[in-house]
Image (tube, rainbow, N blue to C red; front, side, top):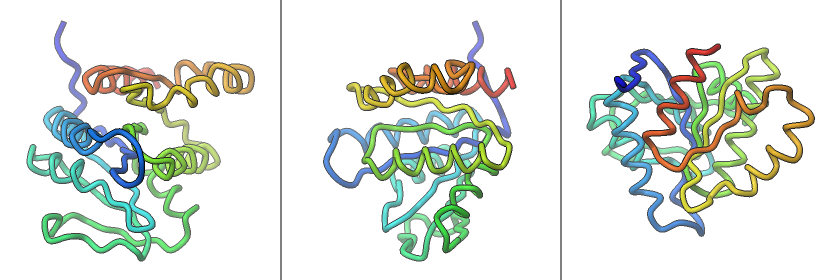
Length: 186
């Protein structure tokens, strides 16, 4: 079976290498950025409170991908990210809504609680604006088991068809396959 390609697809990727957690997060970000960019996807990243997924962005750009950053006023781009479009928006709700409007799907990589919070803020902002964005979480090393449990216990009762909107994966390749399928099903 041919590998799905989705040129023009824009993914909002939520990732952080700050705080406690999996030591391989930077490597995962690099792999994901490169993999998604080689398949023609653009990335939009939310950058807040000084947290910027540099490995994700640099890998995507090195693979020829397009990247846009939506950030707060704490974000200062390092020289390695010179030329990456940065849109500064003061209010968190407005930043989240902007990311949700730009993205076709939301992808969560193992990271900090801040990145998970940003994911759900963006998802709900998009939903409030009438945009249903599929979410796929890379559950490597069970990073999103608590969220998976929440989806099974709460979303299954309150969001009809939740399994077609929120999914979990164990590999970057499978994240891509799920995102491509979910976006094409809309």
